[in-house]
Length: 151
Image (cartoon, rainbow, N blue to C red; front, side, top):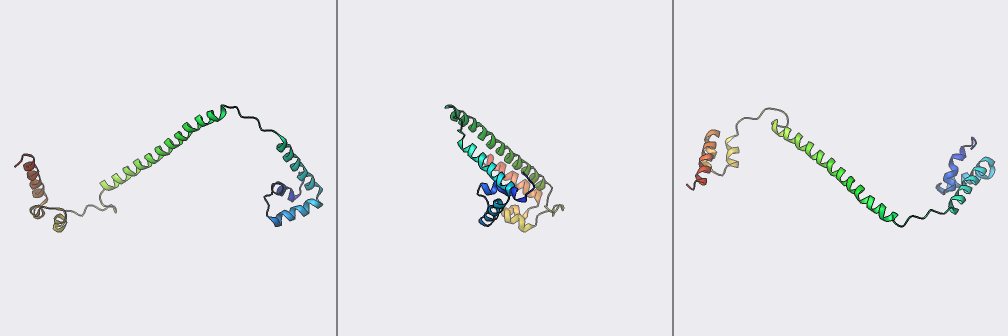
């Protein structure tokens, strides 16, 4: 290959990969440039040689062997993806668990005891809603034990 700037486009021209305006430009250049004309002829000769070559015959059992090798390879890929997703889920679980254990998302301390309306909103028993936290826990235990003992 010489120093002609068009020689880098000859393979794309030969393969029909250039847009029409570039193709005409290269075609006109090749008509006047002996180095590019010779290089284009070498490309055409290689193409003719490859087209005339016969592909080797595949052994009869090759298709079965390829199929047998493909299934485990595909399964390994799926297992690898599952491991990565499981690892990401476990990491997310650890991070979220740690975040929940630290309290509020902004890092501030807990707001303290619940307001009376908050307790009443989540408590079905009006007696528990009026009790302090300790009294509510004691009443809940007594109620639970009474149910277990059939009282």
